[in-house]
Length: 377
Image (cartoon, rainbow, N blue to C red):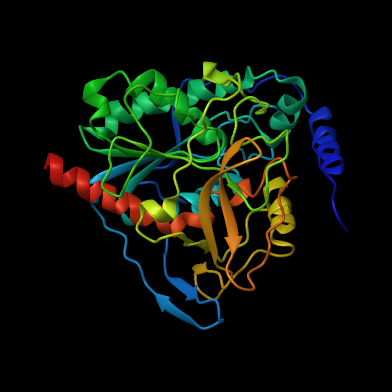
């Protein structure tokens, strides 16, 4: 059965209408989804990967995880929570663990990964904001992220270089964090290896001292992009700021004509235009995101006999201007599956922003960290 944009929006709004508008109770303590020493840490695991070629042949490779990496990664996860309120509690629900595995676990090859639990705006909350444009729930979410950031600096960082990792709502949190805490702080800014923040309309007005990354050797810079595989519609959420329903959240810059950043991870990592997709074999936890992934993949997501895989379907990417939006246009290689925009065409293939280029991003962080350490000892 096909889904129209109005059908998907109506379903999301129906979920939102059933929710309580009250936010979760305040809590001053920082709770970690991922950090060194946690027994149940979704940001570490077996990275053995089956790599499929477009012709269906494959090879298996094991990837080690160092015990004492010299760089940290501070990860803020995207909108994922299935909780019925508009702001989630600080609970490590199954879908939150899934997204950390999908997006952050591979970076453990280079980083100590820290990921705070935060009272994010839930999928129901995002549906409500799409209609009301009331972005105040993001303020509560940001307060938890900022609190965790300060806790990380005080207890764990000890002057170490760090990478910021996010996606979607997580990237929006990190845009605000860089703008408020890092951009104007020279000492702290020098320790920023890079910020990987796709899917939140990062733009040229965000920061004065943190530009878009220009190469694999660039540091103290931003990697951001928004994945589409067909021209964005007039009311696109991504690639332009003035049609973003959350445009006023956290006081971040937006206006018509403001250039949204597009940096192609494949080009930056030295892979030409070849986006190196990586996904876990384990199915995503049940809920809104897992249902939308089935729609995006036109069926069950790819899987394999090893914990991770590079799917047989390969893609290329190119930063381009399309219908007034600055996007990463993703194209299939050969007979690769055409991914279905999900929840609708205003989102493009946003759900796989990170995973469609995860191999490139991990390689890029490795090169940028090496460059930072070489310069700074």
